[in-house]
Amino acid sequence: MHNLRGSVKNYVWGTTDRIPALLGQRPTGEPYAEYWLGAHPAGPATVDGVGLDAAIAADPAVLGERSRQVFGDRLPFLMKLLSAARALSLQVHPTAAQAREGFVRENGAGVALGDPARTYRDDWPKPEIMVALEPFEALYGFRDPRRSAAILRALGGEAADGLASRLDAEDVDLVAIVRDLLTDGDPVLVAALAADADRAADRTRLGDEREVADARDTVARLGREYPGDPGIVVALLMNRRRLEPLQALYVPAGVMHAYLSGTGVEVMASSDNVVRGGLTPKHIDLQGLTEVVDPRPSVPTLVPVESVGDGVSRYLTPAPHFALWRVDPSAAARTLPATDSPRIFLTVRGACRLTRDGEEHRLRSGEAVFLAAGEAVQVTGEGLGFLTSIGG
Image 1 (tube, helix red, strand yellow):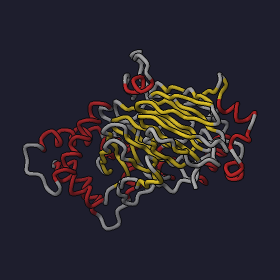
Image 2 (cartoon, rainbow, N blue to C red; image 1 turned 135 degrees about the vertical axis):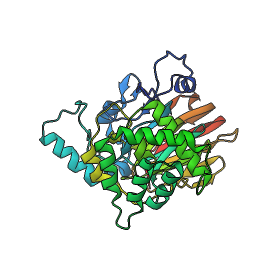
Image 3 (tube, rainbow, N blue to C red; image 1 turned 90 degrees about the vertical axis):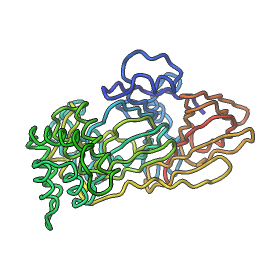
């Protein structure tokens, strides 16, 4: 059981205060977008002053036999705190096969791993789960095109009607529509939709008022944050979902998404492969996006949560790379699950006490430990923690 210090990412979309508050630190004024707890080479956490990736390479037995048989001598998951003050990019993550192919292709083309124009920074997929710690807003997957057409018509205007007609077509090709919108970048259309959204409050709206109101808010929000970006139009084709604290979304490969605002715990396969399409100053790979995006309508349903014992609940996802458990400890000691797996435990509220064979770690909010496979650890306290292990 080793104390773990995460790696801070100061991306421009991050809040300045939420993650420092969770870590018990004074804000510096810089954005604290993400706090990585894992062994990914782009931002490894440290144990005893050594990178977790290096520590595992020196003693891969800490991963346990089950993890090593499936994933090799590599920690298969990455845990993060994420806090967004404004929208992240419109993005998609690849499947395992797509990640391997893309990584090999860019290596063959001589694109350096650190090149900002690189898309595939490793050869792994990146399924992920986001658990809200506060009200959290996200765009997730595409609506049925005809429903999007109805919402666009509710916003009104000739520009919206033209796009709505394409969406209403029997042989609608949503990938082509998204590609055209992001490639051509029609500023007149973006401006017209923004004006329509501003006027919509004074008109009788069609269909579900909540969806139309959300669409209007999406346009207004993104218009302030990324004025003129063609991704604003694409965002209107997507589902808007609000998470309340401790609710979660699972994002599989191919699902277009963008987190709009809020703070949460995010767990994913240990990958940094992000195929971006808009709403970002970073590298945009439209060809890559059209190759991996899933255009089928999807519903952003909440991840089911299963109680596995007093104060311990598991978020149920199909990802083999990770499992996520919520731990609400009490005065009665209980053994943390997944003893045969490498694990990371993070406290996000109050204090948790972890004990093993007389060894004790008291974790306040923002503090974390790495647990080697085979370590039977008990937890008590009055706080809230999250435990990540491998899936299965």
